Structure formats: structure tokens, C-alpha cells
Image 1 (cartoon, rainbow, N blue to C red):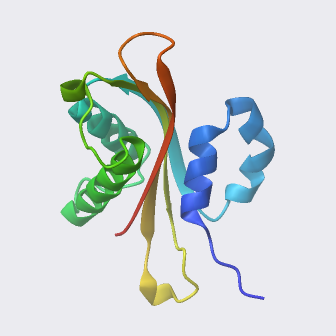
Image 2 (cartoon, rainbow, N blue to C red; image 1 turned 60 degrees about the vertical axis):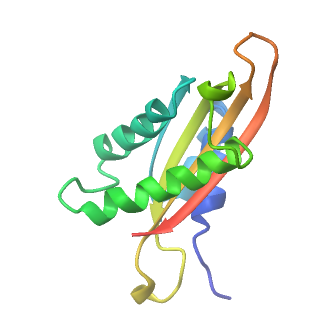
Length: 145
């Protein structure tokens, strides 16, 4: 039986599980590199910057190769589309997000020539900037490097 690494599934789990829930799952992560973080904002650029900064600090992408930053950017935007349900706007629409995120880098295909891919997942809340009026949201983006 063949085994592929499901980087999207791993990213969603890492973004949505609590630190306590993840503890038992960590041994299964030996085939990928990942980082996690949190961001809350009404500003889209702050969300993009938080993910990009975490990926660079954790050496998931190289600052020397633009293609890696470019790939991450597209995965972030695709994930944000899921969070915002296709309307890529937050503050402009008087809504705010509180998100946990995960970035996962791995090889989701058996053939080595397919190279590495990157997945970005968000899990959290979105809604009016009034505490208690938000609801859950999730987004996933995957791109080749």
C-alpha cells in the first residue's frame, strides 16, 4: 500500500487542535516541517504578514528564493478565501477574525520529481467586531514550491 503525506489535513489539524490535543499527534509529524501561530485583526495585510513571518522564522521557506515566498503567498490567499467565504475583505466589511494558523511543508506525492508543496490552514472565528457575535471559520490553501 502506498503512503502519501496529506499536508492539508495535517495543516487543518494543527490549526484547529489545542496544544493539549496536539501532543499525542506530534510523533506522526516526522515526515513534514511545520509551524503554528495566532493572529487576530481587521487588516488583511497583518494576517498575511503574521503567516509569512512565522514561516520565515521557522525556516519553512527560504528568504533567498522568491519562488518560496511566492508559493506561500498564494497558499495564504487561497486559505483566506475559505475563511472569508470568497469575499476577500475583513475590515472593509466591518468584520474581524481571530485565527490560529499552521504552515506545513512536505512531499504529498510518492514521485520525488513532484517536489515539495506548502499548505496553510486557518481555524478560528470571523464576525462583527463585537465580542460574542462571531462564528467559526476555516480555510485551507495548498501550493507547489
